[in-house]
Length: 639
Image (cartoon, rainbow, N blue to C red; front, side, top):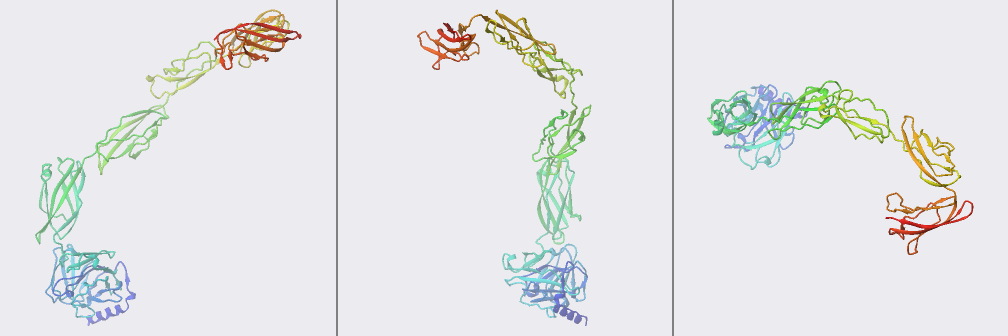
């Protein structure tokens, strides 16, 4: 009666599949034997799924079709309600887990269990060791002659090129698994023994292990260990298949020489991790061994290469200690290690010097800071790392000294030519020197640099010594006419100066730069110029007096470009107008002529420099009284 109720419930659920839901709590398709072996293919096909809730086996229906929702239009079905006793000659065994045969539709399946649905009349000997590891797998024998199971003896899952879809349904909780699919492309050939596994996302993996779900031998997966020199032991996590329970480690000869010990037929750790002791005599390098695992029940072994790599700890070339002054920019400090590829980290125990507390890589450039009176010292600790192996830290110091300013008393201004000294020791006792050399002819700014014995943190200072330079000029010597007023042209090169001319009797005002003189004889005037600080300068000028009108022409000139007597000019006395000034060479050729009293001859004729020798001149003009005046003579050109 109960079996009938279950059948009706399964049929009712099939008619209203749209109310089912797909959720994380639904059963999950995990695998299937697609192209089976045995006398008939259909009875030897099976599927594997996992449960999420505790249910009787009759709660589960497996559906297969070409539709991507096979539960809505199944081609084939294996129903939990069709479970019965095994009738075929086949067997299901495992080295790795317990097998619980399910022969009644009411048999209870716990949550989170693996379940196999297989026709009860199968005749193949299956090893399903790869499907479980130490837990229980439930094998439900489906009687394919009991509805609603619909399963062909000739085969259902294989021998079909199109994409196929599989789904497991929890009909009690209205819960559908994620549909999974496969096609022939996941195998290299269409052979008996083709099977498939699906991950949680429904992606298939095809394999063929000779009609088995069991491994060919025990297997172990692990990652070779890389450790640092000086490490006493290392842990190597591993995962296994094929249920090995024993292991052996056989080191090669060089590893044994280094102190590694072989391990023989030890129990595989239940912690899924090897702990290997590292001999203290082992140096940096690679150490190889063979790891052999064994399933004691089957006495099958598998061997895998094992390697331990010991990495040398890097050493650092310690930077030299640094001592700098406040305000100095320190360049970046780079580090060097005995091992290539090292990375660096550093710490600083005194951030008041302007460097941050820690960092990676080089110590960056920074501006040193010390605004106090005493030196500030920081200890910088540097650690090198290669592949997670840290070396012994090294340290260096950075000392920042405060700056000292030399103090001096300002030197008062001096007169041109007055001697003075700059002190070699400052008021606060700092020895040093001044640059440039003392110059008592012009105002100069001098820089004081401390002696090296005074340390590096003495700041340079400057002092400007003002020199009062009175540049006295009494004017150029000249020729004047007797009793005709003539203005002297004196200057002192600055303002606010006092002028004194002597003799003063012929002057209208002897205390101004340009007094008026009325002379009747040759006179030499002396000019004294002084400033408020008492500095004085001196010059003189010669004024010659002519009683008649005429021309004065120098007897010689030197046109050599030195700025002295390079041009010969006429000096008129009581002349109102010059008609011409002419110069002839010894051949009578006119080499120069002008009517401009301000112009003279530079010794060139037709852009060619003339030879040294005597030349004839003639000058004609009109006196201030209207009388013509002519003068002739010779002059000497000296190159």
